Image (cartoon, rainbow, N blue to C red; front, side):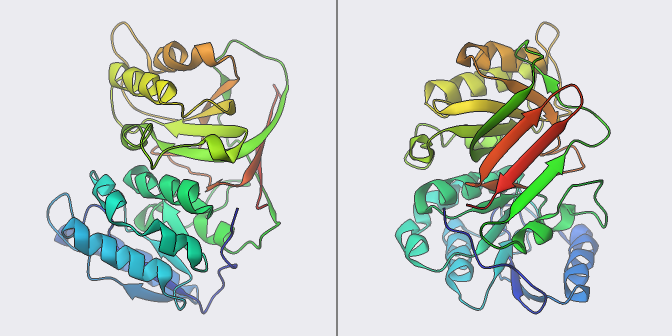
Length: 311
């Protein structure tokens, strides 16, 4: 894996809306988030593809060109969108993955629809990306051992990041209750968006070796999540998984199928540990997961820890 150089105050962070734009009534949120970055000592560059009252900030070609320019600009140390959206998948055929693979790596952070871009960039270029809160999602304070994307982007290659559960313990959905100590490369994202890249040239995980796959439901009901996870499994996304992490979710159950049951129905036949209520995704607080990092999952009745080595 390739890890960008550590982010530090004085470096430049570029902001572009790779999917949904910022509407006028949400500008105070963006302004406050940018101000926090600048108050922390970072230079902030705002892209042209940023505003917009629809589900996209600009045509796909413009959004792709701006993202590529930022990721390839040696003066830019990190790129983050204000938030996710709906159709960031339209950028994938327009990105030059060969150029990204040949360039010095740049941190790229976000989650939700942004994971539709983060995951393929890691899989196709070998560059670590950060599954974390988007720019306006990051709170001023995180609990316990949680690290924000800014904290993690400041780590050097070889560093070890340790984050453990907050107030709510992680649960086993696979029926096991014995202690776990498993390792694998971390990869995953939002179920509703990355399900559409699995089985495509942008979603193959086999080159990573053993994986710890993490997935989370944003808002789809249990039937839709069940179908999506079945499809991802059939497409091979979980073929090398030694464990699956399920993010804490407020997505609705169905009368005859809960979200937990949806996971068990689609993934239970994998025969690997499935750990739920892990703090990533759409229910805060959010720990940061480094796509491509070597993860170590430790679970017991007394300890819930995800350790990540940038190696």
